[in-house]
Amino acid sequence: MMEELKEINWQEEIRRLVEELVKTKSKERLLADAKEIRKAMKADVSAAELIRADRDGR
Image (tube, rainbow, N blue to C red; front, side):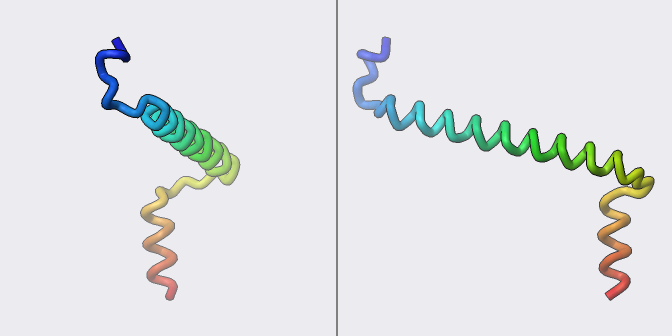
């Protein structure tokens, strides 16, 4: 099947897909860590409210 599509650089395609997967998994891990930190902070307000309060304080 791959032989039929010789015009495709399979090595580059696989490398690109693996890099995308690594980025996605890294983002998922960072978001999970951020959620855990937020839970530990026991913040009852949304991120939008915190940002708004910070902007208003300037």
